[in-house]
Length: 209
Image (cartoon, rainbow, N blue to C red; front, side):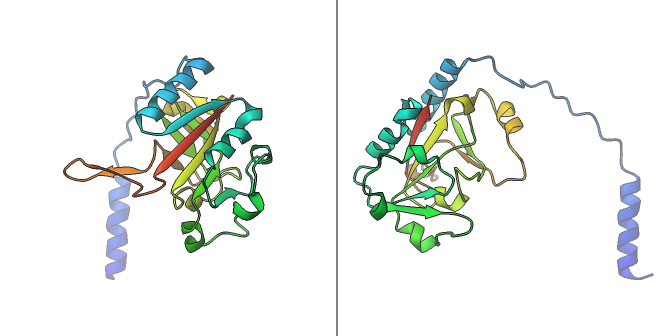
């Protein structure tokens, strides 16, 4: 008997003697009972606690708010699927705006020279203050939301849920998931907070009603 055959026989024997898998209790909350206004209020509270800047705007005013946040920005990148209505009133786009897509991706060195990224979002969890990106066309490749120092993220009010189980039901687990809870930050053994280590140092969230 070869060593390979012996090893496979042992594995087969171990697998054939597996105990019955117990039923996993799932008594946790599956959904919240908050209405849209309460979800927005709770999400704002959590995001502000995480040191994010948050504003609420009607859909037709999102582009105006984005322009305000882009003041002083020398360049910014957007995914190819971003809602064009969010950028219609931006000035100087030909000079400042860079487009990123799967077919025409920007390199890391190019992204490193860009100040700001603007993305949409997939779903947000009010209770934890977490914004989730899943790489959809309006959010783009994960790297564009991690390299620039400033992230402007638009969250549609209808995409806010109360708790994580609700959010997970809306997501495709095979897509690249990025969970954002405030600006990137970490702390050392002295508990000193350092921002911008693993992603953007600044996070501006626009909740579009």
